[in-house]
Length: 364
Image 1 (cartoon, rainbow, N blue to C red):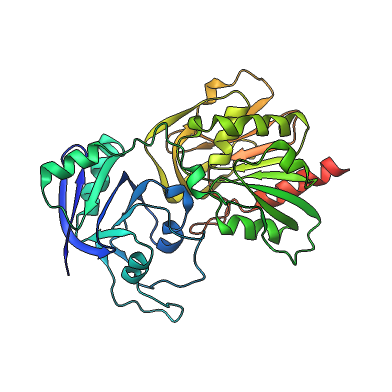
Image 2: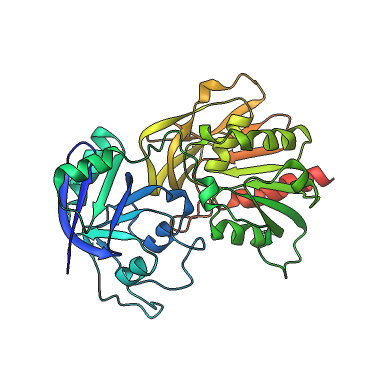
């Protein structure tokens, strides 16, 4: 096996084994605490521009297949593991993880101390990095890492969104017509919407209010996605138009953040983000705690809203950051976490039914 090297912008260096594609990858280095679901994580478009470190020590044990994907391709820049499995054992596997990474041009590295990486990022914060299988000069690689694109201020939505509108399930006879705005949407969100009776058409992120209204939707869904929500000002007017017209809206992750901006709020960058399948969230209305799947590096500032009609509905129990909002007079709500899971727990799956209930009321 060939050599690979991981270098952080602050000069921390890890040498290991090349896994996947040859070459170099630069991006923001983050960590995910999930014990499983690496293929869903790799294909989550919200990781565009990032290099993912898996904290679980053994990755790739059950291989990869054509079914467990969450988008048309992986959008992450690189993949970091303690130990990658080259001989998976699962009847569903059609390829190994290294083969999958190579086929999708993802540069990977294993044989490195992922616990040290994670502790470093928790102390110092997410930072830029480079993985290389071709250049092993430390000074050169540090310079490349420093020169990488900052996540703050970056718009990756245009990179991951669909180019054309499409129907998710043309055979659906769902009761509700839903337009899903694709900021980097995961397939399981579309599956969950279909499951609760929504006939879904997916539109590009740049679709206008007029484009949306042409479908006469009962509701609009705002998807997850990558990058800095504050860099997406071109999305806000469309959302503001939907709010003014009292169209039911449900947002998840980036959709929650851009909705917050459209409502007059602001966001800030978290030190190292929330990424994993074990994040505790409190529903302020019921007092119940849900274990959630999360993947985000920015959060909504609860103090930034001037409209008293906006209510914070959910809070992260680890750091008290905003996990959801609702509105007293408009049919809308959003959450920072991922109720569709993939991977992760299903505690919050009921939110898709809450969306249909909201549309039912609006149609009455």
